[in-house]
Structure formats: C-alpha cells, structure tokens
Image 1 (cartoon, rainbow, N blue to C red):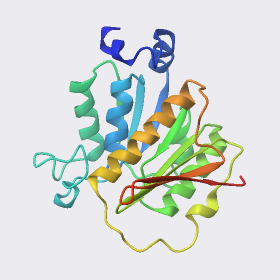
Image 2 (image 1 turned 180 degrees about the vertical axis):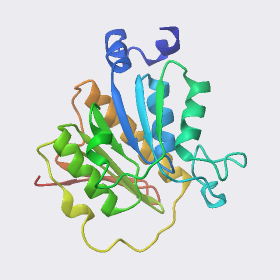
Image 3 (image 1 turned 90 degrees about the vertical axis):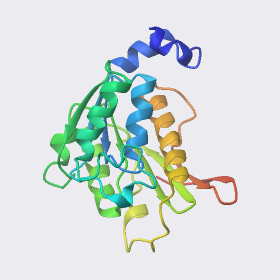
Image 4 (image 1 turned 120 degrees about the vertical axis):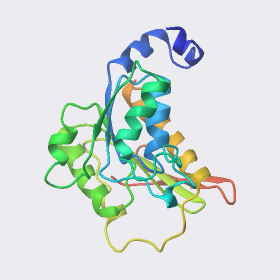
Length: 222
C-alpha cells in the first residue's frame, strides 16, 4: 500500500481496496483520455479499458499526454497500455483498437462500473450515453474547446442527450491546459462515483472558463 500512502486520508485504505476492484472504460485516448487514464491509474483504479481506433499524429503533440515524437503513427490505445505499465503495473489496461459505434457500444460497456467520455463528437457521445443507460452504469462526460470546458455526470436514469444533438460548435482549438483541467475534474468525479461519495456533478453542468478563471454551475432538469 506504500504506493498509495499519499492518497490518504483523502482516500482511506478501505476505499483504496474498493478502487482496486473497479473496472472503468475510458472512451478515447487522446487529449482528455490520456490524462484520465494516467490519473485513474495513479490513484489506483484496478482495471481500465482504453478504447480508441486512432493513431497519433504530429498535431496531437500540443496537448495529448501519450503523444510523443516516438509514438507518432502508433495506436493510441496501445500506447496507453504501455504508459501505464511503467507508471503503475498493478493496474490492468486493456486496449481496444476500435472506435465506439452503435454496433459495439453495448458489448464494450458490459461488465464495467463506469464509463468516462473522452470523445470529440456529439454523435459518439449520444451512442455511449445510450449504452451506459442500457448497461446501468454512470457516464462521466467532458468536453473542451479552446479555453473552455464542461463536465457532467449522468446516472442511468438521467438523460442529457439534448446537449449533443444538432450541429457541432465552431472549432475553438484544443489547449493542453484545458484538456488536463477537464480531465482532472472527470477523474475526480469518477473516483467519487466509484466510492459512492457525495458532491458529484449531477443535475447540473460544470462550465469551466480558464480564460477568465471562472467556474459556473448550470442546473439541469434531467
């Protein structure tokens, strides 16, 4: 347990054992996903399924934790597995070299305790949100655009599909500081969900404005 001794007392030894038995799917291993996988592994979540059908490109180097000069052209999911093997070998990372689709979402999400959204399109989020409701597991969603981000936690009886319907917003860029910030919040929410803690971002959206250093909570009628 010395690996996790600095987690205490924020996370108790008993809670640490609970996290070691949990299984989380991270949908996407890019800007958000790389940080989320790293954070959850360091904090001690025992099993992580890393799903991404993409490979790293040079344009990923500005913000994606798993992206280096050496990983360009390589599978993002595979690099996630390799990274965690040297960060925390007690964590099992299962790479899935596919994009999540309507055809595979249900099977991918089965036998997990939670799913974390690190996707980059509303269409993909709608697919995962529907699969999470069907699987009966929480869905921890995050998104970024330039200096701005948002996080929301949905339980199986919640439905916020309206957030991802319609035309996508205009590109605003993707900054590493925004990705790391939003991924930190998503990781914290995931740990609270797994441990059945309070203070979860549910029934509201957390809007993050790093440019003006503001956090705003927007109530939702789910």
